[in-house]
Image (cartoon, rainbow, N blue to C red):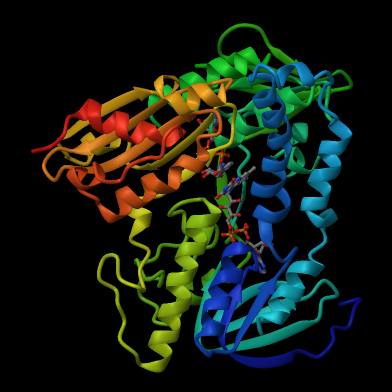
Amino acid sequence: MESQTQAPAQSAEFDVIVIGGGAVGENAADRAVQGGLSVVVVEAELVGGECSYWACIPSKVLLRSPQALRSAQAVPGAAEAVTGTLDVEAILDRRDSFTSGWKDDGQAKWLDGAGISLIRGQGRLTGPKQVTVTAEDGSQTQLTARHAVTLATGSAAAIAPIEGLAEARPWTSREATSAHAIPKSLAIIGGGVVAAEMASAYASLGAEVTVLARSGLLGGMEPFAGELVGKALEEQGVTLRLNTTPERVSRSDEGVRIEVSEGEDVLAQEVLAATGRSPRTGDLGLESVGLEPGTWIETDDTMQVPGFDWLYAVGDVTHRALLTHQGKYQARAAGDVIVARAKGAAVQDQPWGAHVATADHAAVPQVTFTEPEVASVGLTAAAAREAGYTIRVVDYELGDVAGTALKSQPHPGTARMVVDEDRKVILGMTFVGSEVSELLQAATIAVTAEVPLDRLWHAVPAFPTVNEVWLRLLETYGRPV
Ligand SMILES: Cc1cc2nc3c(=O)[nH]c(=O)nc-3n(C[C@H](O)[C@H](O)[C@H](O)COP(=O)(O)OP(=O)(O)OC[C@H]3O[C@@H](n4cnc5c(N)ncnc54)[C@H](O)[C@@H]3O)c2cc1C
Ligand SMILES: NC(=O)c1ccc[n+]([C@@H]2O[C@H](COP(=O)([O-])OP(=O)(O)OC[C@H]3O[C@@H](n4cnc5c(N)ncnc54)[C@H](O)[C@@H]3O)[C@@H](O)[C@H]2O)c1
């Protein structure tokens, strides 16, 4: 017998229902509202999602103070003025202020100001254009969409199926970004972006860090990225155990023990599972419309789910590019195309049209905020070759650029340009070096707009800036005539 009586279900109708109020869902909702549609966002936790509270923002706050200190220490004259050490409490306080103490009043207020309705609770599809929202108190709201339902439910940390790992109560990115004390020692399983950034942060904040990676660091990027970041992490005191497979994990009063394929066990106070992401689609009612729960959601380039004229997905849940900015780009396309289709207006779904996320395939920018930073866009040399391009690779040492020397960076680094030899355009760029993230947008424009190399010779970088590396790369390539 049911011990609780549930409140009677409420019902409401909107033009668009967005399930998931992360940064991406918020953007999809905003575009549709700006196009004149009525929109409700359904959010189960905090409006603002992973990025605001447990991912991009808190992780970058933890990394920024150590970066600022290292930069100052690398410049003679300023270095002498740096006489103290990092104030860990102040860094954690700053992190807490950026996450608003894990309260979403500000973001909920933004939704309200933008004219977007908010219903809190777990959203589940119950049929075509039908969503049931179950609030924490068990009460339910039945929602009907006149035009579209957009899934923006994001992703959660995937804990690798290593024996004992799940039972050992590992940290995920959530605990690593929200911790209020720095453990004495931290073992990190994984060699991807989360592992590299958190290794840099926690080593800087005083933990003894060991990284256990099955192969190298930052797979999928240009090989020199993982090599330079790995070398710098070791200089920061991180123990790197590369080409090492964790086989068994156990927790006792001593902490966490990790038995590995090669060499000695690792003992640490905490273990961070930085082993990728899984889609938040397990409890979304996908089965009610014939989709499989627990899978990533496939879309076309207008972000519509194939076979459904009313269903869209954006952001991490699509597995197209697990990055906030790229998800928001998809959300702008989806929000706008939903408006166009609702109004019977022309849909611009040709590549690079207003209603498609074409850049997901060829021009995704990403920054790994380690010391040195890794900033990349487009194809790596290996990916370009695999895609069948005839390429030429041009490398240039950032330390040989006057602007970098003047700045006196702790890790000057390297830049790489991958050129499509048939069309003489840039397919990909990678910068590895201190504070190179701000170089990335010029590369993203060059790759996205397919600016011919001979025209790039007329884009003159100011002297003496680090951007002069563009000129050096062009000179090294040779002027096309
Ligand atoms: C440690 C870390 C650092 C990162 N740093 C960066 C970075 O520097 N730059 C960058 O671009 N990317 C970064 N990322 C990736 C970035 O966090 C994600 O790409 C981004 O959060 C995806 O946004 P989203 O809106 O698609 O999903 P999410 O942010 O996950 O939001 C989804 C929302 O949906 C809600 N939800 C889920 N299911 C339901 C349901 N059934 N009903 C109602 N609500 C539901 C969730 O509560 C959540 O609020 C980082 C990731 C991690 C883990
Ligand atoms: N600065 C940023 O933009 C930023 C920062 C952090 C995360 N992110 C995003 O979040 C996503 C998730 O990051 P991530 O680092 O968790 O994932 P990832 O896919 O980058 O790396 C996962 C790592 O876990 C390892 N791994 C997987 N299964 C394993 C197993 N069974 N045993 C041992 N190792 C295993 C992989 O070899 C890999 O090194 C990324 O795709 C990234 O786009 C972005």
